[in-house]
Structure formats: structure tokens, C-alpha cells
Image 1: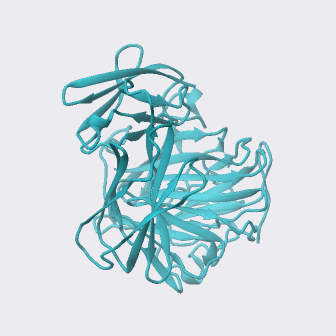
Image 2 (image 1 turned 90 degrees about the horizontal axis):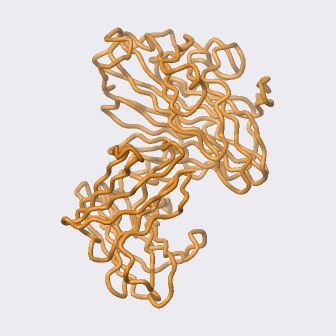
Image 3 (image 1 turned 90 degrees about the vertical axis):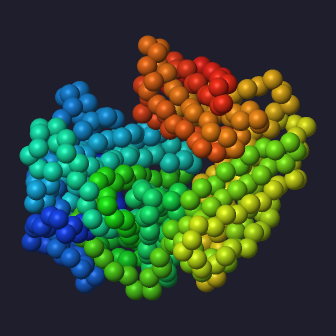
Length: 451
């Protein structure tokens, strides 16, 4: 059942559990598979299919300074999460006012003691998302106090449970498993929308807006599983989309179990790359897929406001293949006489009606031909967008961010750059930075401010 747990700020009225089974032929799994507390079945209910594996039932030690506790950048050390395995948990970022009010609840309250259970408070956001991002890394036990010898786990299944909500708040769970990752869920669920937004990166958003009782491992309609092999770290994003501003503390839980689904659907490994290039008076879109399974066609969708999309064209897919396939589409219906931004995305539709979206690509139209590099928004909070000259598009372009001391704090490179590239600036400290963009020996710079 849905229970309420006291918090330092408010009551927890719902929860999301991320459940992971780590099976590794090199390291024996530990634990007895039993949950010590909470409303769920410690063995994963009738659908659980493995022992505990990893256990975060011990209180972690803070590796960074005491002033970082519960703040962005804080790193926590867990000893013996598995035989011969230690782990660290880092708070990567806190977005739109979200706060971590407890790093791991090891009490006998809601959830499971052997799980990693942070308490996250949503921000005062109107019609937007607030969330916390965590990264777990695995290391060979007792190598150093800094756990400096990474370990790659052979097989990882990560399941986000109890993704529910209400009229004003709808939870979401994003899992980044890296290249080669897949995801599965129950096809008959009406509670969730599950999308692959990048290769190996999946997000499930609650759409029904109904609170489900308890953290129930048998509530298959409110969960999905992401999987991959050779994993040494996993990044999770947990939060909520709020219609009205509210600060609600919600329990999240990373629980080490595996699950099976009735009516199972597996989202294929699909999109390897997706690029958009402004070419004179048209936009050339190119994309590459990996393994396709029952893919019928791609709808190229276009938007002038980033919210409302319409079809710009349809490209039929190969359908079933285990080889990389290349696609292209040119949008000739653009108005280059006025300034603005055009947004593009791919909507892949399978033969059985399933669908998913690609990342969004942006094309900036400007009447001022003297502009070399445009950076926006400025000041920036989370994501910085960099627009390059038309002559640089489709070529090898490097992007560097310098602080006021002249030190490079971020460097990325694209072998075939789109007109507009996005850089994650959420971890930058507030201040002034210089963006340097280089292509074939030509360089352009812009100053930006991080709020």
C-alpha cells in the first residue's frame, strides 16, 4: 500500500524504485535475497528471478568535504556492496530547485534497507521538470580509500518501479545504460510512456496521473527495465513534472533485483546518430540506425516553437536488420528570410504500432551572415547550445569551454557536426566562461555566463 514517511520538509506520498540485477561471472553475488522492510517483497514478488546481488544496506561515508553533503558534487563511498566490490555514489546535478534531503534511507520505513534510497525534494517549478542525477560507479574492493580500480560488471538490468503521479505531479525515471543498451516493459500499461531518447538512454514518464499504493514489485504497469553488459557505471535521473509549484519530498530506491514481464515489449537498439545541417535554402537531415526490429517507417517531425510538431516527411525503414543503415531527408520548406530556430526530431513507428522519438536537433536561421558562432541561452543554467557557421557543418568541429584562469573545463568533438550542438553546463560553477569552437584551423569564440 502507499504509505507516508516523515521527512525534514514534508511527507513522502509516493516513491519510485529503480531495481537492478547485476550478474557477473567474475564475482560471486552476496546477500540472501530478502528485503528487511517496506511494503514490497524483498525477493521481488512473484516476478523476481534472482538473489540480492548488490547491497547498499550500510551507511555510506562522505568522501568529499563536509560542506558538500547532500549537494551537487558530493561523493559517497559504500564498502562491500558485493563480494570484492565497492561502490561510489555521486550527486551529479540538481536541476530546477531539486534538493537531496537524505542520501540513503537505511531505516525500516518505506522501501528496502539493502537498496540505495535517496530522498529528493522537487523544486518550485511551474509546468516543468525538477530532478536529481546520480551516478554509481563500481570498484575492486579495498584497492585504495579512493576506490581507484574500476570494475566492469558483465550484465546489468536496471528497473525503475512505481513511476506514478497525480493531477499536479507526474514522476519520471531516466536511465542511461550507454551504447548497446535496451529496454523492456509491459505492452498493456496505460500508466507510462517509454521512449529511447538516445542510444542506450531511456526515459519513462507517468501519463495517467494516478497514485499507486506502496512500492509494489508486482505493479508491473508502473515499471520498466533497461539492460546492458560490461557496465562499470550507471547514471540515473529521478524527478517529476509539476504543473503547479510545489516542494514535495519523494523517496526513490535503487533495489538489486531482476524482473520478468507478461506481454513484454523490447525497444530495439535503433539510433546511432542523427544530424541536421543547413545547406543553402534547405535543411539536410541524416541518421544511422543499428539493429532494427519490425521498424516500419520514420516520420520526420518539425517545430517552430519546440513544443508543437508536425510531419515534414516520411522515410520508410529497412524493417529488420542487424547491420547499420543510413537514411537521409531534405526539408526544402524553410523560410530563410526571417530569423528563428527550427526544431527537428525523428518519430520511428514499428509495424505493431510501438513508437519512440529521437533526440531533438535545432537549426538556427539568421539574416546576419556575419555571425560565426552563436551561443544561447546566455546566461545559461543547464544546457548550452552552440550554433556554428554553415561552412563548418558536417565537418570535424571541436568545442572547448575555458574558465577565467584559462583552464579547459569541458572539451567535446564532433566528427560530423550539426548546425547546433548542445553542451551540458549544469555542473559548471557560476561565473564567466569562454566558448572556443575550431574547425579546419578556423576559430571563433564567445563569452557566456553560467548562473
